[in-house]
Image (cartoon, rainbow, N blue to C red):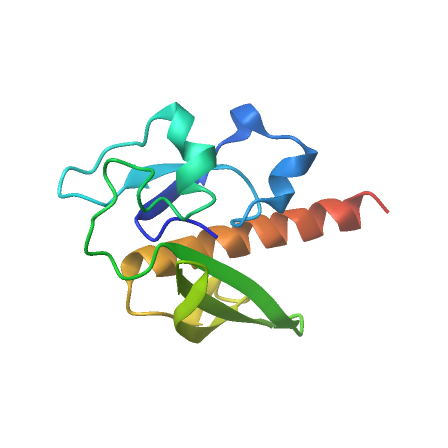
Length: 142
């Protein structure tokens, strides 16, 4: 579950290890905090603990008091080789707050059914990028 204000920009390969695949976005990502109007990279100490894992309410000084969701979760429920079908859930205090479905078309490498929220859309793209990279690595190791 990523923080709903974390905008992933690129995979952070400087801290990659086998456990990184278990992170909510499927890898450690460098990004920008959108919790305030000042868009800045989060502090190094916060990235993994708060930005990557969500539930930053009351733990991050940038997290808005009036925020609805405090975590975003993704899962792929079907991969038919051409389309990836995903679900996402926005959570608040470990409970569902909002949800939706997404579709990613491999041929065009884009979301064909995407959420309105730009940050959730970008997190979905990061999650898909990590998923496809891991799948490719597993296929290459066979």
